Amino acid sequence: MSATYDLETPVGQVRFHIPDTDTNNPIFSDGEIAFLLKNAEDSPLLAAAEALETIAGDPARLSSFSRGSVSGTRTSADEIRRRASALREKAHGGGIIVGTLERTDFW
Image (cartoon, rainbow, N blue to C red):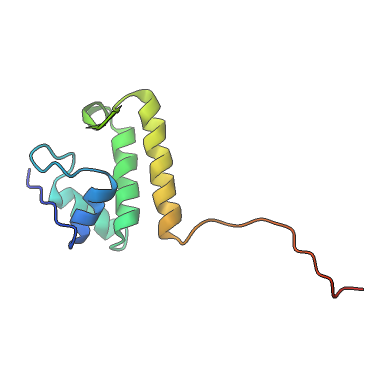
């Protein structure tokens, strides 16, 4: 499985956000990340979100997912999904803001 890590490339940027930076023991191959980028219209953030969803939904990948103090457990699957959601929100420029507008120029 071929894996590279260069932050100047979209593949490297996806790896940074997952994180999947250990090229000796990668979670995804470069080809898999290229596929995710193509489906995400070349957005590294959206491709990373999709990669995290794939990790969270695949027992084999989840059990091998270990970065720092976070390892593949059921609890971390939910955390991984929250991270994926946050990346999608960031890629789309934030979420919807709900509030009350008070106007003083009304009668």
